[in-house]
Image (cartoon, rainbow, N blue to C red; front, side):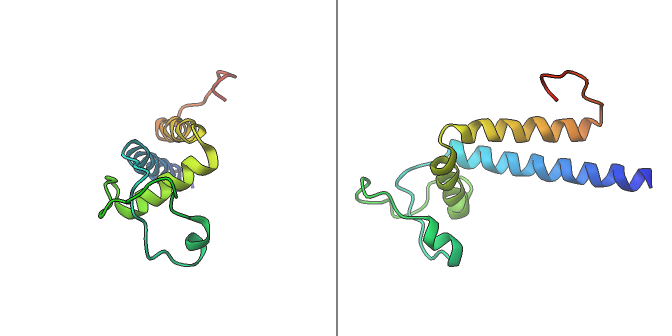
Length: 109
């Protein structure tokens, strides 16, 4: 049972780390003029192109493609600069899961 729990925590830590890398790359390569088209149901209602950007770019300049452009746009619209804090928190949480140490500092906990 202990190995199963350890493996599950390792996989969760790796998934969080991969998600944090994706979010970091998409936020760092964010462009307001990225064209995001052809979205399916929940996303087509959440995303509206910026009316101040004209003309929009012909192709997506985000490193993570159109999904990265969409996720960066939504993160910045919902959280603003707090999106960067959320990404840093994901990195810290994933490293804490992967190191498998007990966190005793109250500030970090």
